[in-house]
Each structure stands twice: as C-alpha cells, then as structure tokens.
Figure 1 (spheres, rainbow, N blue to C red):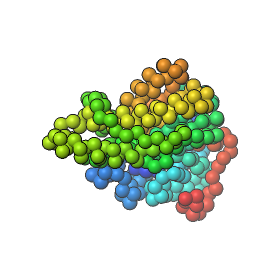
Figure 2 (spheres, rainbow, N blue to C red):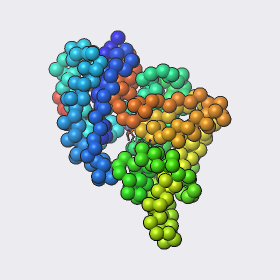
Figure 3 (cartoon, rainbow, N blue to C red):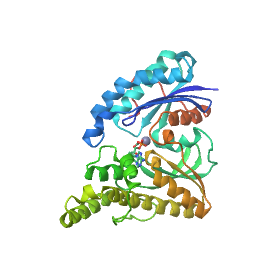
Length: 330
Ligand code: KG4
Ligand code: ZN
C-alpha cells in the first residue's frame, strides 16, 4: 500500500499529488500567469515560479490528502521531457525530500504519465489500447501494451498540436496559451476557411505549415475587407480548430485500422478541447470504438498522473538512484 508523493514541474505548472495504492488522494496545481503577455513560456520565469511554488504546493497536497511527510513511502518526480530549469526544481525537491526521510525515489517519463492519467480514476481502459497524446510539446500515437510498455507508432515531425493552437492564436493576438481561448471562440463560429492540412505520410503529423497557411489567408482577406480578423475572429478560430482536429482524427482512424485496436484514448493538454472530445465520441460511435477521455484535471499537466505512473513502477521495484547531483539524469 505505497503512499507516494508525486511532483510535476516540466513546463509552467507546479503540481504535487498524493497517490495511495493507485488512488489519487490529492492533486494540487499552481499555474503561472507570468507567461501570458509573452506569447509563450519564458523558461527563466518558469523556473523561478516553480521555485516559489513548490513548497506551498506540496504542503497543500499533503494537507488535502490528510497525510504527513512521515506517512510518505516514496517520492516520484518527472525526469523529462521538459524545460531543464523547470525540471531541476522538481527533481531537486524530490531528491531532498527522499534523502531527508530515507525513502525511495521514482523517476517518471512525462509522456508515459500523460497516457497513464487514464488510470487516475474509472473507467480505465483494458490493455492493449491506442492513445493519441496531444500536448503543447508532443503529438504521439501510442500503442499501450501494458502500463510501462508504450510503443510510439506516429509522431509530429515539427510542431505539436498544442503548439499549433498556441502559435495560431499568437497570429490572431490571443493570449498564451491560446488553445483554451480558440476552443471557446470556435464554439461561436463556423469553419468556413480552408487552411492547409499538410500530411507527411504514414502515421506522422505535421503542423508547421498551418501557421503559414493562416498567415497568407489572413493577409489576403485583409486586402479584401478592413479589420477582417476582428470581424471574423470566431470563424477563423473555428477553421483553425477544424484543421487541427481533422488532421488528428484522420491519423487516429488510420492508426486504429492499422493496429486493429478499437479501444481508443485521448491524453495531454489538447484533449481538454471540447470539439476534439465530441468528434472523438462521434467517430467512436460510428466505428464501434470504446473511447476514453480523462477528466480535464487529468488532461493538462498534473502530478496525479506522475503518482499513478510511479505506482506501477513501485510495484515493479523500479526505483531511481539517489545521487548527490541534483539531476544526474538531465
Ligand atoms: O499537456 P499540457 O498541459 O502541457 C504540455 O506538456 O505541453 O498541454 C498544454 C497545451 C497547450 O498548448 C494548450 O494550448 C493546450 O494544451 N490546450 C488546449 C486546450 N486546453 C489546453 N488546446 C486546445 N483546446 C483546449 N481546450
Ligand atoms: Zn504535458
């Protein structure tokens, strides 16, 4: 019955969770408003905000779980991928906590954890299943054979899906991260513009051409109509969202056909997108898929998914080395 304190600090969310025997007792996340006006995450600001937030976030997570530091059996942390300065804060905290209490450390891969967020609560998919992981930094099609056996069968060759949302939003003057904003505005518009949906073939994705396509279309429209973006913002957002989601679903269908898997899951920050969730449901209903989408809290970066993944590693005795170097692995 391990009680695991989990830390996630790979990007711009400082998160701590307590997971006991695979059950999430608390999951506390402190966001960072500082990046909004810069149109993206500023790594130095992110590290400093993690440094300020980490101790209070852990304290609240322990308190909400009704657990004291002495009850913790192991500490889990995200080793990567992520921003080095951000990761260092979480890794250093986890190592210090484990060293002080003489308990084991468990290192967790952030992308593997996004997939295993499905095990934070019911319904949990049976193995094997297919997972589309779409975040700010990654877009992957993964065959999940077992919790720790995840095979990547498709990936983006340039921008990630979340990055496509964020960079498109930046072109429109929307604040960072633009994904949730485009989600909201798109619901009020119609996808009447055709943006390019480049296809690198196979199960891989490419989103970098979308920005150029948006830019050229908007330049052309601006010549035809004054203040085009302001007057048609909702329709532009709906069109951007439609282009991204259509690409994602086309590849997901191809992956399901290729692997024969009909248990299909979504993971990562972009799976918070309402239209993506609805269209996955509709596609699933048409094709006889069993679909799985985590609650919003478990879609974006969170430490509960790190704790759940760490529980699988704990059961298998997969512990990290406790070295003096703050982040030997990085
Ligand atoms: O998984 P995540 O929280 O962090 C990374 O590991 O990257 O994903 C963040 C990404 C951002 O690009 C953000 O714009 C996107 O997820 N995102 C959304 C929505 N909510 C978050 N994209 C589209 N619609 C949303 N509702
Ligand atoms: Zn993430």
